[in-house]
Amino acid sequence: MDKQFRVFATCDIGEAIDVLRKRGYEVEVYPHPEAPPKAVILNKVRSGVDGLITTLRDQIDAEVFEAGKGSLKVVAQIAVGFDNINRADANRYKVPFTHTADVLTEATAEFAFFMLGALARRMWTAEHLTRDNQWGFWHPYLPFLGDEVTGKTVAVIGTGRIGLAFIKKCVGFDMNVLCYDPAYQNDAFVKTIQEIHDLRHQRGLVKERPWIRYVPFEEALREADFVSVHVPLLRNEESDTPTYHLFNERTLSLMKPTAYVVNTSRGPVVDEAALARALRENWIAGAALDVYETEPLPEDSPLRDPAIADRCRLLPHFASAARITRLSEQGNGRTLRAGSDRCVGRQLRGRYHKNALCREQRRVCRLNRRLQKGPRENRWTGVVFQIGNLRVWGRKFTGTMDRCGPLLGCI
Image (cartoon, rainbow, N blue to C red; front, side, top):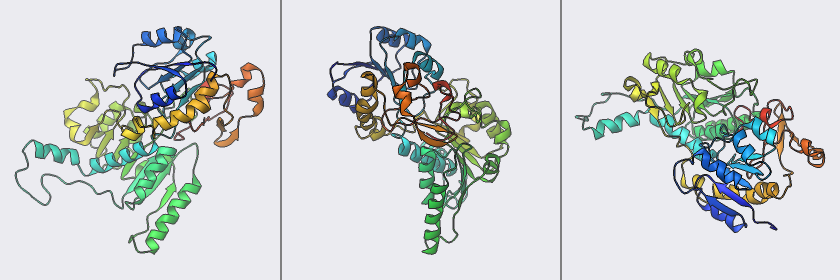
């Protein structure tokens, strides 16, 4: 590396920092656990840093890009989602941004499944009963019963990486799976899972053969015993298939009164006021959330209603909080190591990654080399970078980053 590039990380990301430093980057890390004030980020960018490593807590918009005009070359997001980065502004200032698409897939999928089981079997309620010394005697069905997971039907809303990983977890519990994704149906994956179900049934491992299939959204809600949400946040102006408030009073009312919903995707996908009402009025049996419309969860949130506390479990955006995923060189460190050479390094050296992909109408197509060889304006057309396994998805490829956002369930 001819030049020692400067990178500012808005939080400590463990061994990943060491990886970048070993690659020759000068990396400064914000020393406090809370998110840095925006003024700190602006000052660092104005000082001439070449790259930013950010999290969902940091608002990256025109003000930041303007402050880094002429020096800021890449923004690397340590998360799958990038709702905090203004895509239109990034496109306008021609600053590529990246995300860590696959590093937290398994951690998030297993967490969602654990939440589903704990919610259905009322484990939190049972623990509080024991801790509060209210367990006075044993009885076969008092003070309450939970619901089994094995053999039940789960609707997986969004069949991207995390959704598919979640489905694999369901196989061992002989669950029937209703898949929904308006953008893309992974028929090959569904066929493989069905073949596994068939083989297990043929070998006598299960009495009844489980099934898996794609269905319309409303059918999935009506038929499911459990609903697990794995979609990116897409607002009305961003997509023809928006996911903002996908779960609202109308859609929640379609669910069985015995059904449960788990959300580990993005908070605004669920209308929290509608969910609180659905729980109060027993439209559904329960909910478990790890993400919220506003984070941290406000004191006056309707989800804090004591009347629904036993059936509404609230977690602190915790799904990917596993040691390997968050801190280890095997997790974000591994992804950043790849990124330092393949994405960050190339961007800082004024080169473009040949493996950047775009999807138009869910069909993979490599970006034409002319995008990289043509005029500077064209080089940025439709390119949204990520660290590591470089991919970018677009509902409609219009040639601008602001419209080349993630499809429902694709990341």
